Image 1 (cartoon, one colour):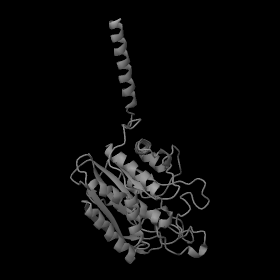
Image 2 (cartoon, rainbow, N blue to C red):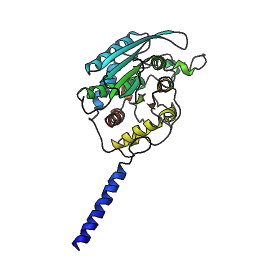
Image 3 (cartoon, rainbow, N blue to C red):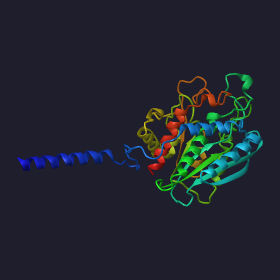
Length: 334
């Protein structure tokens, strides 16, 4: 009887080991089907919210403006405060109407000595025209761009702040790239022919002229409008085309940290955004975390997109938290 119990015990232990192993099964793309557990520090949404507000305090950061230049200097100094190596990449860019734009991409590198790197990026400029505002008298007014620009930079600044106190547990370097002139695309009220290349001018320049010769990264994640109320982030089509495994990685990370409802297993449309030239020119597999509002009459990007209502009153700390904590999980899982 004692011998029989021993064999039963060993059999049960084998079953438990097999079950445990299956929970950590690795897929063909190298991602765990179920992430082990939440990793890394807690993302502070209050801090990210404050970083978002600080950018808006400069006013609309439209190209060739004093507010734009002052905010750019502030962003660089904040990344420097958090121990990053900061480079400003300046270039004269041509707008859809021939306007010469004094552009500046900002590259802040955490632990630049590490060869294994992850690219995080967002645009920091403001849309010069609220051309999707329901009130046509606002169509030529600039957008404050609390969500459409400032929120992505705010999340990256908070990540940099958290990483400053941790130089041992993270196994990869991180490059935070703030792209300029993303939002100078042809306005809807213009008679000019619509041109996809009129968008993402700073990203186009960087993708062809990286800040470091031969620069590469394991993957990239673009943050665009990551602080809006009621936001959900559906899987964007270009991201699935170029970096399907990174989409899986991020969406699994969101589930692990309890924010799967913000990242539903649904596919959205194809977006012209900064990740397109990064994928096509720099050849870095990069995804776009961008909201999709399927039932919003004003815009599938949400009710404040390219309107004068894109202000701090419409920023949700819960959304910032969901995105920020998901990125923490992704970085600390590398």
